[in-house]
Image 1 (cartoon, rainbow, N blue to C red):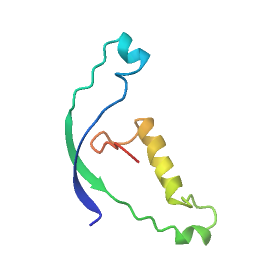
Image 2: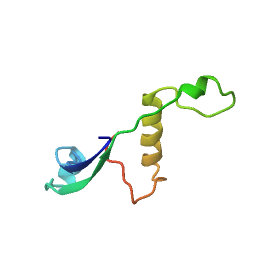
Image 3: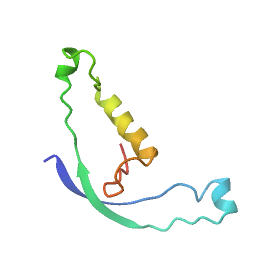
Image 4: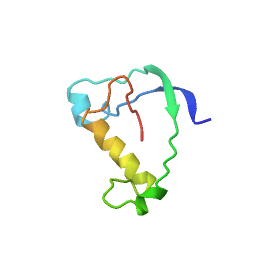
Length: 83
């Protein structure tokens, strides 16, 4: 299956930093649930189509998704937790 239920918790990692200690950030385990989706990218036509925008590797596609998510320009209905 390419779509699976997902359950996890998020530790933002700030509690042990100087910033976290100064601002009293404490990690409390917060359960989250969602859907884990595996993408299959078919980029075979990228080499035959001139002038098209393509991802030549899965890493490029993942980098694009991560950059788009970091700019908060993806739909908030489908947050990305990890690429």
